[in-house]
Image 1 (tube, rainbow, N blue to C red):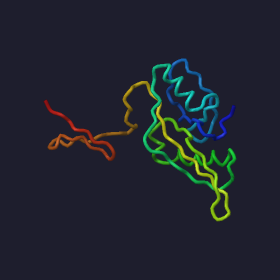
Image 2: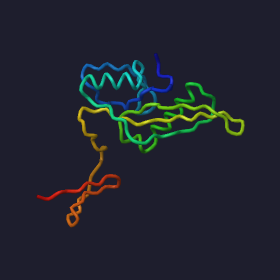
Image 3: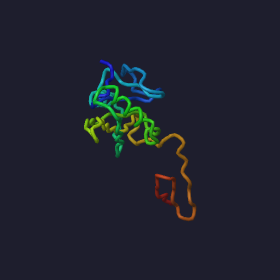
Image 4: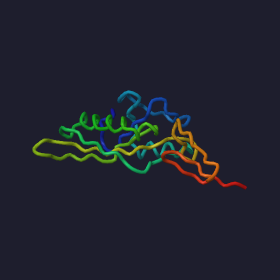
Length: 154
């Protein structure tokens, strides 16, 4: 069953490390991304959990609006735009959570909502590649543009 851009469809970044023994059929979707053909998000999540790995749902979602009728190609175009956004560069998978078809000034539009997800073995969400925190010795606070953590001295 080819990925048609329906609710529940999952997309993996190329070279995503998966649990040993998990066979996932994919096809090229866009540069750097592959569409999963043999599992939806729920089923893939169950298979990953059975392998004692984690399939994180990340807070927040991205909604993209595209002109056109609710056909698979329109949904695919919206997902391509969503994974190209900066938030999509930090994680290794995405899942369509909602598709809404409507009209605006007589023009058909499709709104597609995508949740970013992350597959990894560790229970703690790994920081994105290129994350380099700065340590302020005077305050004992580790800083970055998005993350803050208190450093305790013993």
